[in-house]
Picture: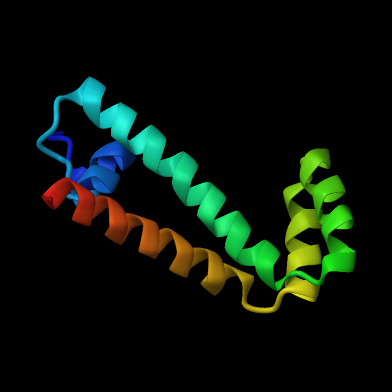
Length: 102
């Protein structure tokens, strides 16, 4: 079987970001850096909508590492948090593409 872009998530992300032509080591660095920035942007976007009195509870749940509990908390406290996070990641992807094109 010939590998396709769909078989390799790294290649899929690289294509989306417009960096698929980079050498693999550099590609991994770019994607790792982007992933960190995107995660921070998504988290900040959600935290901005989270009532201030709930932020300590969010931090406790996040540190506990139970995704289902954290998901339920966000569903309850920040309706539409997935869309907020997705928009933040999309904006970071756009910035990365623009910076690479410059």
